[in-house]
Image (tube, rainbow, N blue to C red):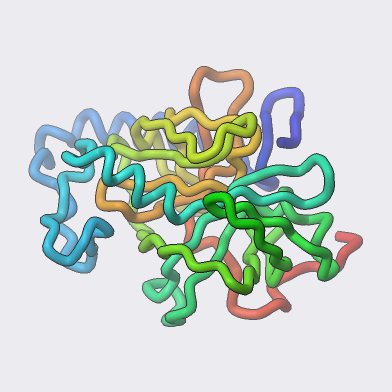
Length: 257
């Protein structure tokens, strides 16, 4: 993770002041409007689908899943450990991006800073449930610290994605903090800042969780964990999935940028 005086960053280009103001406004709107909107849940959004199976009812997004053990297994089955060089270790997740770009091919997504030294066709080492695989960086968005990997031979289930997030929703963050594989933490969405493609949550992540998914109670990935606010208590920032630029390799930037 990249440290600064005020942030432990696993992303670049995030605006703290915007997030803070957005968090205050969103939190205020949530608490004053929650009673009038207490019936809001996943069923209110017909386009949402449950990752728990076609026969599973859509859950209340403000409550944890009923079968939490199965839910955690579903999420961690789609994540893996990523290595680039000797020091950088992070997390990647397999996503079903069809809802965003109409492509049926799953996408392996992580943070750009985890794999930036491997951008020139260098090998990215993957550890998926004990299997050793190799991949390459296919495309990246350095401003939002997101990258797309090509991992031949990887057979992992893809998690659905959602562009919707609301303050107060239950979330789970998965990753590899400090080398602990398949680690999870839980919390709620604290704020959403659409123009920054940013979700704030109190689910705690640590070094090694860069690139891991932030998942809602329906099993949908609503963000990629990107940064921790060092001067605050338990504030994690995630970049919303729709910010990922994966259409072509030209989404990337010159090596000297």
